[in-house]
Length: 208
Image 1 (cartoon, rainbow, N blue to C red):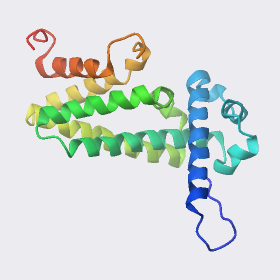
Image 2 (cartoon, rainbow, N blue to C red; image 1 turned 45 degrees about the horizontal axis):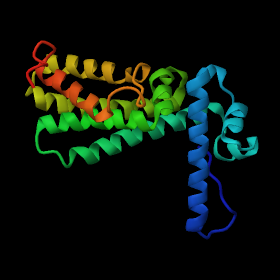
Image 3 (cartoon, rainbow, N blue to C red; image 1 turned 90 degrees about the vertical axis):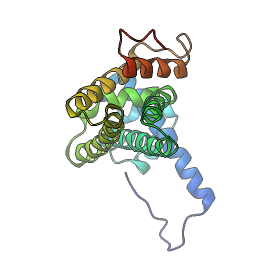
């Protein structure tokens, strides 16, 4: 991400910082919508500028390239997922509560950031070089964080922990393909249903 200096040693004012962050957020939202709609290969910085109603020079003030835009979307998304999950886990008192926190966190991020979620699911391989390595490291941190929670629930059954973690991510990451928050059940209800199936299995899912 590009950095800029005013040419003086004085720190930017809070007002200037807030304006900078607001514009940055607007650009990332516009870029997420365009890339989610057209794919990374089909998207252009000009499309992002049009979507966000920002001049091209305004985009390039923050980002050097379309590749850097994609990196910023994924880095911000996964960093946010990790941070929010860590905050939730600190308040949980049991392994089951921690697993519920994992599912809630993932779903709620998805509902609030559908375009970013789609970009993260589909466009990881569009990253390259240091961008790919940096995002991969954060994704691995997220995976291991969730894996540790599942390991607590399964009480150290390593083989089952690996399979269950992969199953959970596989099912969570594709919810956006069919879930419509305006038509389908409440996301909190869906989260509880996921937890029930994970803890009790499909055949026992009617017991709760």
